[in-house]
Amino acid sequence: MRRPLPALKTAVGPPTQERPKVIFYFDIVCPYAYLASTQIEAVASRVGADIVWQPVLLGGILKALDSHPDQGPEARRQMTRLDLLRWAEHLGVPLRYPAEHPRRTVEAMRLVCWAPPAARPPLVHALYRAYWVEGEDISDIEVLARVATAVGLNGGSACIGLQSPAARLELHRSTEEALRAGVFGVPTFVVESHSGPQLFFGQDRLHFVEAALLMHPLAKKKPEHDPGKRQPTPQDILATANPVANLARRLTFFYDFSSPFSYLASTQIEDVARRHGAVINWHPILLGGLFRSIGTPLVPLQSYSEPKRRYIREDLLRWAHYYDQPFHWPSRFPMMTVTALRLALLAGPAIGPLSHELFRAYWVQDLDLNDPAVLEGALRRVGLDPALLQRVGDPEVKQKLLANTKAAERAGVFGAPSFLVEQHHGPPQLFFGQDRLHFVEKALQRGTGTTPEPQVIVRSSK
Image (tube, one colour):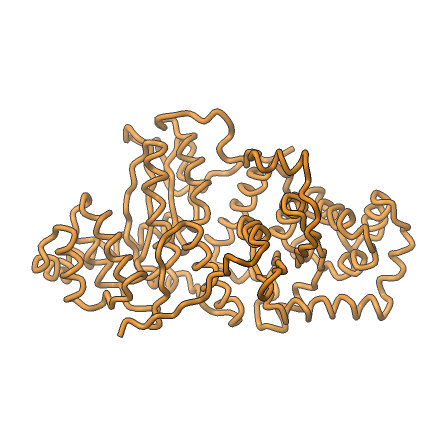
C-alpha cells in the first residue's frame, strides 16, 4: 500500500488569501534560481496563483547549516555546468556562465528588499540578466543603480535604499525566515495549503509545484487527473504499440541497489530505451568503492543538513507517486550490496529482470539483500539457478565488479544513477540523476549527430 505524500510542516493555520500562493526563495548568485525565475510566472499564471518573491542570502543559509554544496569531485562540478547549459537550451533561455562566479550579491539582494513588492519581479529579472546573461558585476553600486533605473526605479534612491539599515534588516529577516521554513538552498518554493505548507527544492521540481497549486482549494481550475502523477503521452502509447526498430544505440545504466534514486530510474529506463530503439547495458557498480576513490562521503545522505535529509525522503515519495511505483524507505539503511551486485553480474542476459527483483526486495519489500534466502528467491523468480549464489566469491566475479566501478569512474561517473548515451557522431554523453531521464531521451533522439551537445561556456565580463 502506498503511503500518502507528506506535507512538510513549516507553519500552521489555513491560508487567508483568495488565490493560491507560492513563496519563491531565491538569490541572484544561483543559476538554477535564475532558470526558475524564467518559468515560475508561467506556472502561477496557469493555475491563477500569486507569487511572493522572497530574496534570501544563500551564503547565510549555507553557513547556518554548515553546508558546502560546491565541495566534491571535479567531475561533479563539470556536470553541474553542463547540466545548466542543457536546461537553458531545453527551456530556451540565454545563460553564460561568468568566469568570476560566484560574485558577491548581498547588495543586489538588499536592493530587492528595498524595492516595492510590485517592482520586485521586473527588478529580479533584470538582475538575473545582468549576472547570468550580460556578465556584469552586480556588487558594483553603479551597476545596480543602472539596473534599478532600467526597470523604472529611481537610481539615486535605490543606491541609498539598498545601503539602509531597513534593507539590511529585511534581508536578514527574510533569510532567517527561510531557515525556519526548512529552506536549505535555492531555488525553493513553498506552496500553502490547508494540510500545511509544502516545500519543493530546485527549478526541476516546478511540475510538482504546479501540481500542488492545482490541488489547492482556491485554484482557478481543477485537474481532470492526478497532477502529481506522470500521464502517458501519445509518444508513450505509440512506442508501446510499435516499438522503434533497433538503431544499435547503447544506453549504459550505472546503478547500485543501495541507491533509492537508482531504484526509481530502474522503473523507467526500459520504457525510455524502448521508445528510442536503444539497447540497455546494465552496469552495476559498487557505489561505496566509487565514493572512496573520488573522495565523496560513503553515505552522502548522512552528510546533509537535517532539513535536506528530510526533504530528500519526501522528494523520493513524490517521484514514486509520479511514476506510479511502490516505494518504502527500508529499515536497514545503508545496506551493504556487494553480494547482490556480484549476483547481478552472474545473471547474464537476465541481469535486467534480476536487478528489478533485487531493487524491489530492498526498496519495496524492506528485505535484507545479504540474506541468502532473499537472493535465492530473486534468482528463482527470474528463472535462474539458486546455485549461482555460490559463485559470488569467485575471484573473476569480484574483479568484474571492481572493473565495472573503475570503468564508471573513468567515464566521469560520480554517483548513481548515471547514464551514458553513445552517439553516432562525437563522444558519448553522460547524465546524472533519475530526474534527468528527459535529457537522456533527447540524447537518444539526436541520432544523426546534427544537433550538438551544449558546451560549457565561460565568459569573462572584463
